[in-house]
Image 1 (cartoon, rainbow, N blue to C red):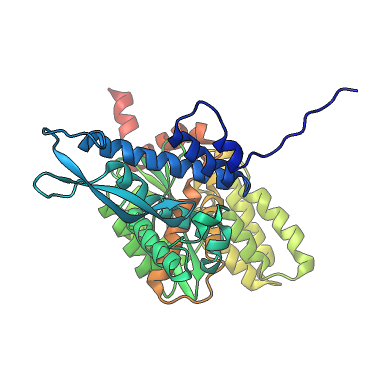
Image 2 (cartoon, rainbow, N blue to C red):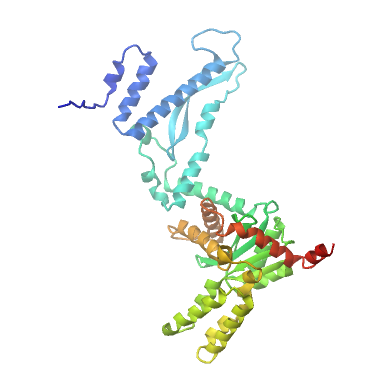
Amino acid sequence: MKTVPTVRLADTADAAALPDLPEEIQLALADIVGAAREGLMAMSVAAGLAVMAAMFDAEISQVCGPKGRHDTKRAAVRHGAGRGSVTLGGRRVAVSRPRARTVDGQEVPLASYTHFAAEDLLTEVVMERMLAGVATRRHARTAEPVSEKVSGPQKSVSKSAISRRFVRQTETALAELMARDLSELDIKVLMLDGEYMAERCVVVALAITADGTKVPVGLWDGATENKTVVRALLADLVDRGLDFDDGLLVVIDGAKALSAAVREVFGDKALIQRCTLHKRRNIADHLPDKEKAWVDAKLVRAFNHPDPDTGLRNAKSLATQLQKSHPRAAASLREGLEEMFTVTRLGLDGRLAKTLTTSNPIESMISIAKATNRNVTRWRDGQMVLRWTAAGMLNAERSFRRIKGYKQMPQLVAALKRHAHPGTERIGAAA
């Protein structure tokens, strides 16, 4: 029988007994193999701290020269050590850093220490955990396990410290979203939707460019999804460079305020497509359960008919059929009915038409944004709602793919241009 050798974890004595190694390396190995008993992460942390200390010493030696050697030409001298802290595993860890001063008494900054002491990485870790649903009071428990030597003096893991960092980061996210330059984006589709968060209505805008890329471009806060709020949002988009001269398709959920604001800001250059799914749900809300199935089946056939005129006639016929028995459902169907067939009138079909006749892309983004704030127990004000929503929108953007049917986008671009400049094609043909 073949004997399998057993594996034994080395200890500090084993490290010290290693032959033919410099004393400094033996001491470093002693610390590392000792940390290995606490786990792989602890060993990695010990190794990292040893490398970091070596980098500090190397930089000091480069500035001041070798230690213990007299040099009349040196520009700086060692000046003991100072206490500092570096970012490690989502926490601040105390370290000792060497110091140096120039011959005229000026402090010499250590580039390596400045790099490791930067808080950007820590702030990113806090942001990621908060967006993943980790409560502020649980950050210390979700941090990577490290050795007792490191986790003992750790800082910046308290509930208040985490909260302050997240507030700063979400303020940055909101400012970034609201300041995006839209002049460089070839936006052809704008999706608008309103969502109630913390008893406040947040109107969100998602742009789709000519190549099918989705880009969150704005949000606005208001008590309700009214015309004034939406108009302010759209005006802000125009101020930031949204170009609609060659036509724009605006997809909305069906709210009258959205439609009115779009016409006021964009005029005849914009075409409105109402979400067919919202329309079907709204009509179903006015019907008894036994009537919902056959009505919805007729609506689907009407909205998906390849001939928009025929589809519109079928939808109007259904409204007439419902008028006597379910007048509210009939009224809901007639409201904005012409705008249910805008995409079909533009000559689009297939996957792109299916994508643009619903508000699914923007609703998907909003659902991700809402998932990030599920741990909020008290909303302080509207600014907090905007900060969290903006952070969630940018978080959703990282997982965006181009819309389904994006290869048909040139067809949409050409159709919008014909709509915006109706005489251009005839003039070109005559020439």
